[in-house]
Length: 69
Length: 259
Image 1 (tube, each protein chain N blue to C red):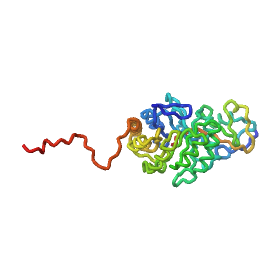
Image 2 (cartoon, each protein chain N blue to C red):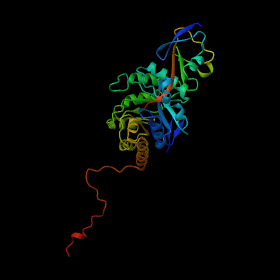
Image 3 (cartoon, rainbow over the protein chains, first blue to last red):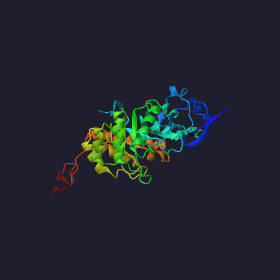
Image 4 (tube, chains in turn brown, green):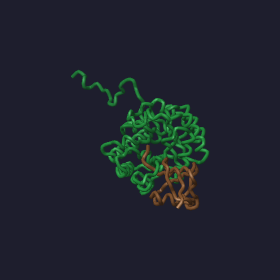
């Protein structure tokens, strides 16, 4: 199986070629969390996550709400 | 008159609570409940599967009547703050954004120029914009002009517990302002929150003072009472100050009268 390399939350990660944003969320255990996903500075809304496919060197941020003042 | 109006929202509670620095998510939730607050701040963080308990969205969304106000903490420029605001709105579904832009981690003082720039953009995008600002009446007015829904001058440095060291400037902001003025940052004790309300603030935002108290829920409750007391006192009308004593009893002279 061929893989591609992306940057996830600042760290390099290998994912299967053709993986979608939804696949990535599943693989990191974030599928049931309320997360925001940003790929190359663009927000990927929940209804688009299955159809947006990751590309080599994509910069992906998965974000949640934590405590803050 | 008795509710706090921010954008199209109204709140009966005038205490806004920050959710940072609590020893645990459950301590934070207990404090939120004890405070009766209807508006809490949260911050964006990277997802980490080893620290799922850091994700506060689930526990907070179980509290009825609570609105989230994400902050842009971590942003050092207007561009970063606008980006954080847009991502936060996706996640919260709330139009509230606390614009917080501080480039220097030592003093955490807000950058007025970047703050103004970010607020102008976000207000035009329909956010309910709540900027954390230095206690500067000129900046406050400029932020009102670009469509902010409130201004939130600091009482003193974030987390410092130095109280209302900017009191005179905050009074000037209140006098000139047509939008709610909310003291944010630096408050240590409920009496300071009460003083801010008596002075004319429409609400106060507290985090550290509650989060690091020995009993955060009890401190949250104490702040809620103080905020309410200060608001009620202001509406009741404080008596004028006098340089000399003004007797409260009739000064009749019968005790000294010759018998």
